[in-house]
Length: 183
Image (cartoon, rainbow, N blue to C red; front, top):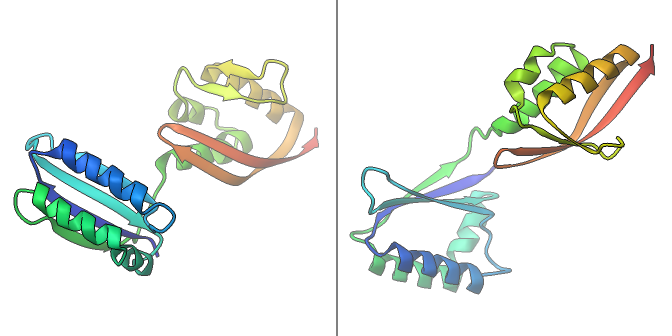
């Protein structure tokens, strides 16, 4: 089960804290078990920060905690903080990738279900489609996607089977299988 450690602290020396985190990442490279980190700064209290560190499991987090580099980093972190940092240890019980859900809706509701109105909900007006199977491999705008999808649906009874999805920021890449019977 994915595990997240939340570290809540205050510091007026964030530049030094940031450099400390970079040094720890470099020194623990190849041994650390953290898979993702994110730092947030409180908009109302500019010296208040929250670090979120993701691990594959609690056990992997504990391996990370026992690294000598992690112990040194903790000691230096405390010296940079105003007061003792607070730690929360969380088992992740729900993890949603909302942009992946939007991509799935396109396949299920529009491509296979025929509801083209979904495209207006799921695609930005400046959507960029990269399709190496077409002569014009890059098309901009959801109207081009709507036209393509209506053409496919008119020609085939089809199914789309997403095999893998990768999401980062507002981009989603999907590897899929398409099966169809020509009408």
